Image 1: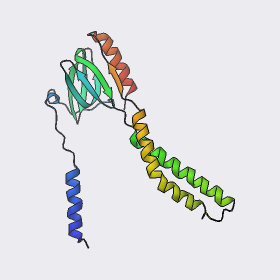
Image 2: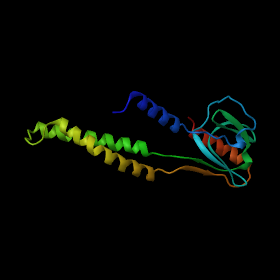
Image 3: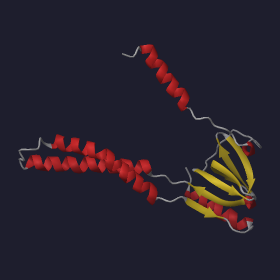
Image 4: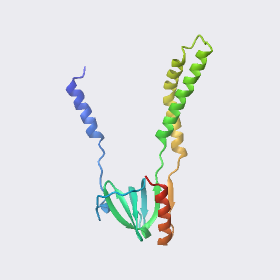
Length: 179
């Protein structure tokens, strides 16, 4: 039998180990500020010279610069340097939840229908819900994987050096992916 102190220590150790260490990129430490106006969902920005800034939000758009935000820090980058912006779309958990819920509802209704017709071998709607719960886990996993493979990232390529065209495109992107 596990003692209470050992259990507390185990929970504490798991919590400490699960904290994600955030390393700030050197490029985000320039022009620091702690304001966070309305911004977009998190995205990856690919800049000229094979540079990349990951997990940032697009913020205030000025004439030739756009503010990016990450973990409370902000930086202005030139719009002319942007080559591509990618928003990650991951739908695994949404697909898993839909598959699990559909399984529970389908088998629950099926169990109620069999109970209504007086089927002697089935023990009512509760059995249908139980079957739905048991089958819901694998069905949810499969539907989550299907949803993950079906969804695609939103990638916007910026070709050329026309800052005005890039600014217009960034305005559209920021409106579409607003939080």
